[in-house]
Length: 221
Image (cartoon, rainbow, N blue to C red):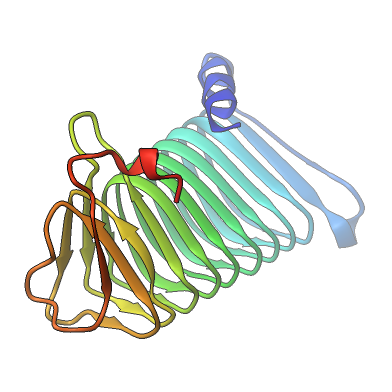
């Protein structure tokens, strides 16, 4: 789905910028597409932005979809969030579930539902109220994670690098070639760590499983 979104974005970037709204006043939705899709909105329905550069701020009553080479957004979303971009920076809040695909991203928001991430490099701050699942080459968890986390390291020659400096309230499973815990990290609940070596500077309890040079993708976590 994300690959198709990016292909569509490339095609739209060759056209002039367009903006349209539809639906009754109490259930209004908007669409914006073009080389630069930038707008501050306050709508009760859905919103879609697509372009080479996407800048979307404001409030959406239902679902929000963002697709572009560069995506920056500070939005209050009443439904689900879908973001695809080479570079993504999202702030705000999401009442539903969120899907993010990016090469390089920074998420600092109140994600009240589940958060699914596919990224080469990403930092997650703020709060995730539901379950976090991330497939990444490099990830830094700095926020509050109320639900369990599943981190699956990816990379060309190794299975990634995971950095934990936030709070994992329900533990989870982390698989990466290198797992690093910062001094400020806190973990509650059952924690499973899968890596080539045991992480340094972490004195909490956990179950360790040796990755033994394998790729995390091969473990079917």
